[in-house]
Image (tube, rainbow over all chains, first blue to last red; front, side, top):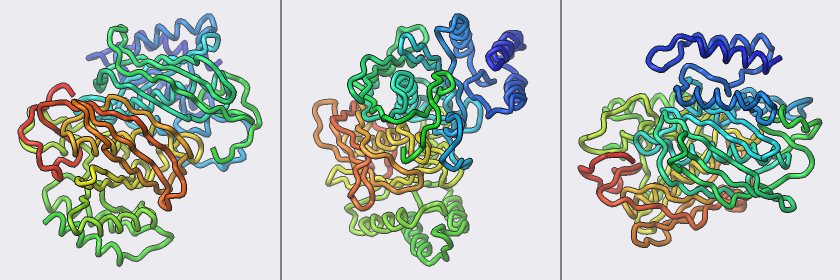
Length: 246
Length: 246
């Protein structure tokens, strides 16, 4: 029902009157309303008024690919505990925020949505860095690039190994990413060895002509005994696990 | 005059009545007032009501070490352009924010202050991750750790090579960092080879007993033809450079 809701909303989205490349604000209001009708936390991995045409076009393309079930959109909430199903042994702390959803103003922080392809062990993230992620003047901070890459490969690792923690992250910064542009973060689990998952990741321009960053030789420590994470709803194998330490 | 002002403020700070380990709010108000009296942007690398006793104690210790001039506190503003002296060829964009200063609520985001020792080619950052930097429940997101490490080694690289851009960042995550705790990020420029600066960095607990993260083999590309950066006021050699592209 949620899926149908989102797709219906997206069809509506394409008819919304535009001005200056920005959707009108009523769009994000409709999404919030839809979320609260379902009695759920707000899902931020949905179009809002700050998304550029490039971002919307890409989102459209990936949403089309979800129709046959090979790809799935990963929902995103601003509190990590909303990603965890079932009973919580951890007292819900409403004062915390998932780092990537800590900036409230639409378009100022991390605008992103991830799509998962379980058979390919692949997660692709569409990312539009906002004006509050600045490093060098006009460009995304290297730390913000590391953050979106860590999150994307983390989601990918979870899809193959369950509960994980990053053990090493190595990033080559090739070309700076202008604020407000749209890039594709494409990650893949290459192999699993014992408790380690090895992943690779590329951040590229939408046309594929510019490589912005590359994460190589990354391994993620697999923690036995349960899983928790972004996208648990899609993976469907996280149940009744204790949440302790990390 | 600014230095004297800050130190005077800090002496006042030690007399402020405490309750529950938190300074009263009037402290940060005084700092804001002092900043506006000087006609400058607000410097965020100063104590505020959210700083824990550990953070304040460390800050005190480092501030003491600045007295003989070997160590210097690096000021920190929320717009990168405030770090750049002289005439700007880049139109000042007030809508952007330095990524590390993008969260407004005191104590929720990156609370940090850096100290530079030019003769040792070393920058130490005191870092207290706030509740909006969450990754695993209760712990700082790996991306936020990458961000503070990138910034610390970036400041260190600038002190030895002027204008720089990060070329590679490789981080080993050893122990998770609890939200609200205080860690020391200690970076050092190991060598300069042509246009590259090689740096290393450790993130440790205040007592030095826990290694949280380590950045190894990092190299930062040195860009010829001027410099801009965090801490330019201390380095005193950034003048009349063009700001273009990156």
